[in-house]
Amino acid sequence: MVKSVVGEETRLQFAENRLFQSNLLAQVGLVVGKLSSGLDRGFVYDLVPTAPTDDGRLPCSLPEIVGGSGRDDKRKGSKGGGGKSPAEAPAPLIIDVDWVAEHARQVARLLLGGMHVVGIYVWTSESSFKASSLVLWQTVREVAQATPFYENDPQERLLVHASYSPRRWTCRNCILASTNVSTNLRPCDFKWGKLLGSLQLFRCIYKFDQRLPIIGGPKNEAFKDVLREAISDQRKELKNCTKALIDGKLVNEDLQCILEGTHEVELLLPFMNKVSSYAFKEEEIVGLLVFTGVIHASAYLCPKETVSEAISEVKEDIINSLQSRLEIICEEAGLTDSSVSSSIESEKETSFDGVNCQSILNMLKFNCTLSFPRRVLIPWLGNVFVCDYLQPSETLEVLGSHCGEMMAMESPIDNKSVLEVEKEVASLTIRSFWDAALGRSAPLADCSGRHGADQRSGGSESKGSSSSSLIAIAVLLFAILVGWIITRTLVH
Picture 1: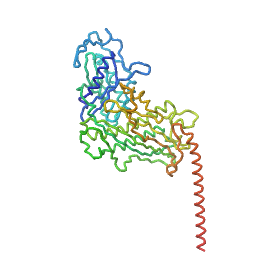
Picture 2 (picture 1 turned 180 degrees about the vertical axis):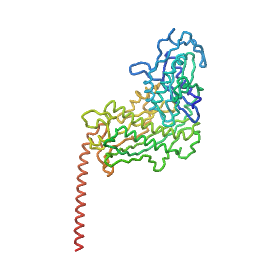
Picture 3 (picture 1 turned 30 degrees about the horizontal axis):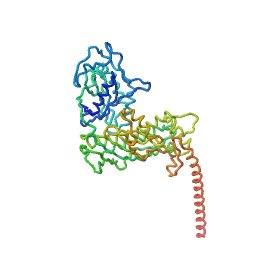
Picture 4 (picture 1 turned 90 degrees about the vertical axis):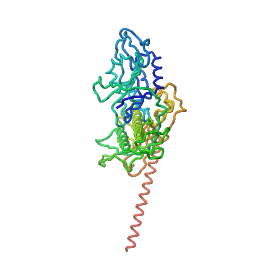
């Protein structure tokens, strides 16, 4: 359980200056940091404000203040204390909980390993904070549900309060398992320090090549469900990986990360580490999903954390990255009704979620391929990076409107500083079962809709391969006939 929290002083000071200059009565945002169960400490790297809603409303506001208006800045005092305005009556905050949770989900997608959405912060007076325990608890809970941890979730999150009346910072540990609002907000020691400069970076290139059967008939699966199953299998395989090479050396898992700089990680997967087993009838299997690619994973750790925690964070980053790419594909297809559905000739429009693999095989008569979004790294704070994902048709120009807004970056993103670390794009291919079993290479259909020319050229290739097969069969029959005649002649 987190007993003390350390915040990056440069970012907290920046947030304090920004908030006091804004003249806002209330603001809510996300706490980006790390909860270390091994150290029983929490780390706050930055505070990311939640932007206004689509219709321009603030996600956090106060009703009209009884007996006065505005902030009582005259008696805000020092950071450690101060007076309370007698004219200020307690007023509970009004928070758009769903909007804050959605912002948290989007931000969590951009964070690398070792960086998490660990709670929320709120900017309001002490009296309003005390009057808002229920809505704050609901907001923390919804944010936690929108951004679950990979494994061993501690079921606790942070609530940071920046008060302007009196002027001070406090932090509370929210116990998610508790249902008693009055006791689940536990005060914890909160101090400022220097964190970002001491973080260590662990990088890993993870290659995967997975094959899953596509089930037809009454068990026919949706396209997205097959992909989720593939990612789930990757999670199970990585869970069995407990050792890794750090900078080419096998080190003790309990060793603290005391070496500075960037470290290369090579995960040592157990031999024959295939946890999935399938048992289906022959008539149920209609195809094969080939899921291959390369993931560029990264994780940031504090110096006192152990090597085992570094390995765990790298594995978490791999799985989160795969899940984020699948979510992006689903969202894009749901909005534009394109991607896979555009390549399926159907009388009614079908979204990505409703597309099943058997319909692709039956209706297209072609193998189908789909490229996953590729990860790029973007400078964030000092030497710390965040990531974003680009579709095959997108360019670096879209990063400013998405990553810049989600992370509330102060300066525009310089495309020259963006690292395009993934040259080999992760992709999946849907193949006919017998094409895969017999090693036949059927023509590919582009699931993004750019498949007309490929289909036409594929048709001629298919005809050519059919002619070659007929010639081979004829030669084989002729050879058998000649052999039979020679045998008969020698016998007589």
